[in-house]
Length: 230
Image (cartoon, rainbow, N blue to C red; front, side, top):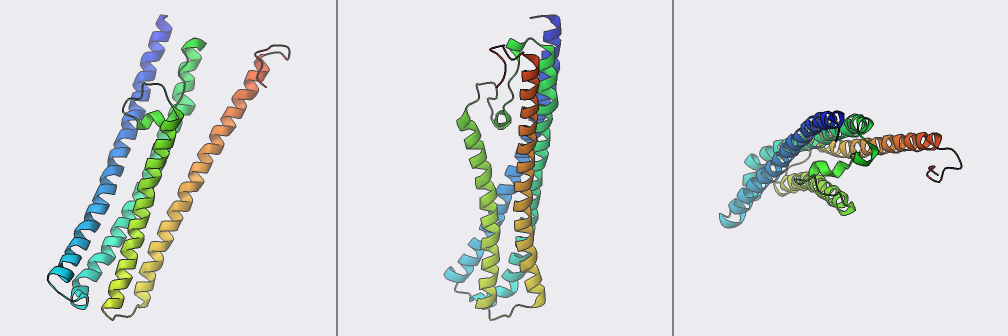
């Protein structure tokens, strides 16, 4: 291994390590948000259930205290949900930088047989040095989608619980209440749509770059070359 290759590998390990550390920080923040959201909701509903079923307090009496807590708690969890999704954009940007800048720069400076293959899901594994498998990508996507869907379901559950508590206490919905419900729904579905659009944009960008690389590979080899890309 030449000195140039060794130097290029050291720079790559430093830059790629910084990207992995950044992704890990993002993942830690997401885990805190996810666990905190469910912990807060669990504490509230355990208190509500205990007060109503064990202590026999009517929902109408609990409503004065429970409704404001549930309303603002739902808003807080929805805000956390928005932050949770925005963190995905930071992850995607960091990983895409490694894909489009760090890996190509390394591969330009080292022999072809030593090229590093980019694997986006390796940034979500503890042992990122082992060989990448297709199942790893499926597991990462499933895990991320499950967390996203579970927070979505939690917010909807809190929203319906608030409406049920309003009905049980005999209170009528006012314009302020409808505004609250509309804000939550708009935020939820807007975030989901934005998340899908960004994922599609990243995918299209990756396919576009792959097409350029394929065209460049064809230009480097004459038509009679058996190694010419098809």
